Length: 304
Image 1 (cartoon, rainbow, N blue to C red):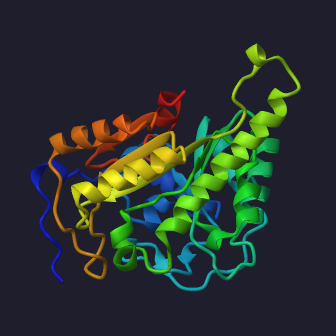
Image 2: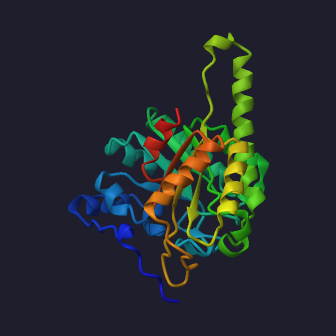
């Protein structure tokens, strides 16, 4: 199937500068993967030029095969026990203050890879204690214990992307389930709230400060969703409550992926943002090239 031509506002110039190539070599030299490359992110050049990257843990092959995603489908090896130390090496040597970690889905692992997330975060906290960490996790096949284990980690942001509206899950997110993904966010929020409540009982209310991570999600538009379907999705996310939401244009990464239904005009993202904010979501970032991990530190700070 022929990929639809992109409109002028979606023609981002590729940046294969010496800084970009240096970042690529450093990451590759450590045996690390990034979602920037595996998912063919259009912002790769901009982020790599600054030394930033979103690390892809648990391998670079996904056990699922979502219609929108460019990450390779197939079996992955056992998790690398040194992965957290390697990421710590990179972030420390490049003076990274805020790191985003995501992963492929590993339905072949008993806990979906949750214990590996724990190991990686523990290594990062031990080796680079000042580092702020955002985790963008899979659904762990709906395992509540796995979700809770990761949500209890000392991180700044717990994220799980809904990606699209309920009505498109069967076509766009094969192997996923809308209600299950929503439940991932609810369990994380509940785990965070329970932790805060237990700590609040040991001190005066006026000294209480928020301990747990922000809850975040991201969606794509342009896959055939309707205005009413998006409104229901915003309402569902606000009820979690999700505090950070990213909204960006779906771009077909290859002829084998789902086609673009339509391209949203830049002005439409302002309206989407206003609708999501009106539902009660604290901080919303919307734009053609917005991605869940793109400029993530700014989104986190905007939600404080």
